Image (cartoon, rainbow, N blue to C red; front, side, top):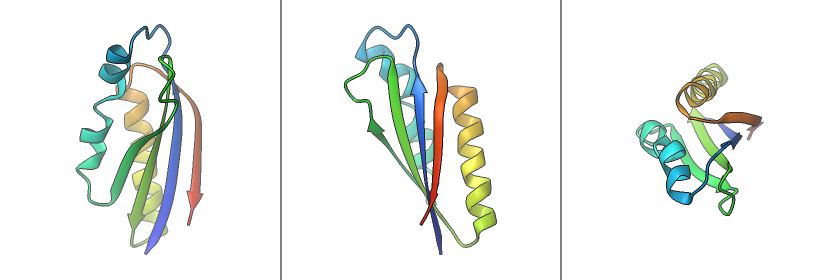
Length: 93
């Protein structure tokens, strides 16, 4: 079993309220949490309206599958979230 931790920091320019922040990034749990190989949580910047940090824990049988799932998460997040990805870190456990 292979495990990777993917952390993404997102800038949410112009976001003026907690409600708006949740509208922009709130669907991440639903989009990625359905996959049994992925655990997702908002891991930082809880008190900032214009930023958010999300962590994804990905488990799979092979390193290739881990790479594929992490790339899919990054691509989908960049396409669907109304914001800018500032930083991406991956850690293999």
